[in-house]
Image (tube, rainbow over all chains, first blue to last red; front, top):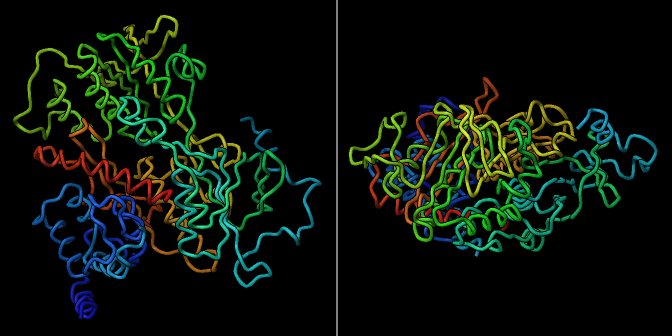
Length: 105
Length: 453
């Protein structure tokens, strides 16, 4: 159900990103850039920065879009989320949703 | 290094001693006689350690060997907290136990005395050679000692420490700070761009101001800057204004909130930009003075000069440098000067990316992914990088910078993603800066774990 919905939204929401770069960034390549703060494979050692591993994909997408649009105020995440297209956010969501929650413990 | 020496370094293996080529020839990919390709990494710092870990996590059949001079790594990030006594120097020490035990990375603790890009072999100081299929070089920085009269490596090691590589230099500066008179003056001289850890000198001024407020409230910190701006300059200055009676200069007023404080005399931190004569031209180590471009000679009790920087000596020896830094193909991070050698971290030219540990970490992940593709005769994949850096203006006031980077295929350069990234907003709440201080701590812990753990 979750993946089905996500798959639907990928088809429905693909847009040309404002930055004009290619759409071919993979989930792992994108997710690796998060790992410095959120932990290897999204399993943060210090959870004051939230772990991302095993996060529900729909929740991930809505949170990232809320940061991007500014409807959710974070600290650095508003600035970070504005870098990503819908498709990239969905690729990251799928990548993290499929990672085990306690990978790095 | 003279060209003749560099030729010796590069050609050390050419004559005589090479064993029969069949037995040591590097494998060119899977399915050859040697089924397990060998990736060698020179330098076990942030870039090298991350590359080793991510290569082994992606494919445990790959042989990964790190050649590193020291058995214990001392990270630079967090070393400003050692100066204030908030952390101990031991807190900066990191072993390679996890990389060896958990991920199966091989380590050779030795120095490299030669590399032959043709035969893909590395000569070690202790003797012996190592063959590679792909080589990653992550050697970090060295200092440019010229340019300031009276300043030298000897002066830095005895009287005016840079404390820009963690270890003895950190402790030398800490001893000087501790011994400084209660009404003493400390001068910090940040380097010209580009250099390792762009916000570092200003975080140092901040944390020492917080420290001095408690233990030496009459102390002064004078920042003599060869630049007219710096990483996170406005968020830092806003914090200094709120915490350390810092008068924000007119050139930094744009975008500042209305509730900033106005002071008629200098606070604990004074910042002199290049345009106001901040550039120094000479030092006198015996008299403990610096002389500025405008001819002012200033005495201080502690003088912390962070010199101009360049790629580490190894990169010069290996003929990987143009100017002061190593040019690379940004899709694969491969040197444009020698094939099969990839350069990451502070020593490479990474365009819009700052020379930070976080940059080195994401460059390492990109190079690990691309090397696996190249070893499989596949096309490299679309890369992306990031940089996130939290600094503390005080132990309870944090500021940050973030950037998401992509490859611009038209220019081949790494560019910041338009409309994103940047520094902490100036209209942020106190709660925001409090949170960024909390995140700084978590970021440091998670970053170290992602790199070495």
